[in-house]
View: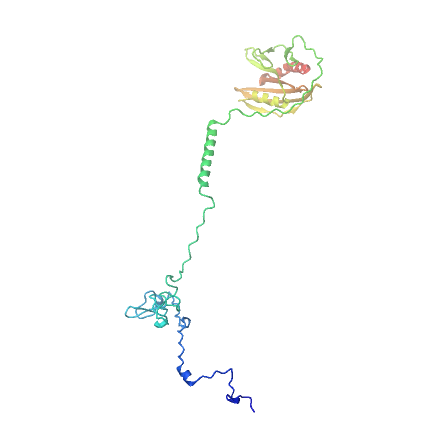
Length: 330
């Protein structure tokens, strides 16, 4: 007994084997042969643009290298099929026409129907939009023009003619005790209890309205020296002194000394300063000094001495007692 089974063993048929008659086998229709796959076609190599075979419009009868050959009759033939939609590969196909849904058809270009070969040039760079909106530029230009016009007007008109005056430093004011000084009968009152006693050869200049000014004259009638007593309130002695010396030497060639502090000769005084100077006025050499004394009540009294240089020594000696009379009356 072997492992092989006999077809006719036991007279029973094998359920897994279908028996067919020889007539049926002959009558069976042959199966339809499938069309060739477009992917099995031979693809021509991509031509090189640097060889004769890759030039467009090659010579008749030669392959152009882009999947399209020219025959001697001028009718184009293509290994990829032409654009007329005729059949599949080699003119064969189920329907004989390149209808949609059928196998891949041929094309006149290796890169597609309406696609040319790739370009060797770089694409142009994309244009960058300006970061500043175009509307801002004319507005900024208009503002700049207005600013320039304003500056030009200020320069032409000279700006504000009224200069801003800086406020005077704050001065503490207290009421001083009553003075025990009694001026002599020939004393000339100035203001705020201050007076000056003239000496021989010096007289009051009547036309002076600010303070009291005494002057001495030469034999020819020309003035030789001045001694001027004037006052101001709510300022410092230093500020008042500098204002006086600047006014005296204005439009003159002057040389100013340094402002120096003086020992205050009386208890009612809180600030005492002095300065000396020399100058040339109308080709005449002049020298002088200014002293300023500030009291506790805020009254500042200045002594302004000015003389010709050739008479300065005698004039200063004559002015010394007049200065002392002023200090005593402070």
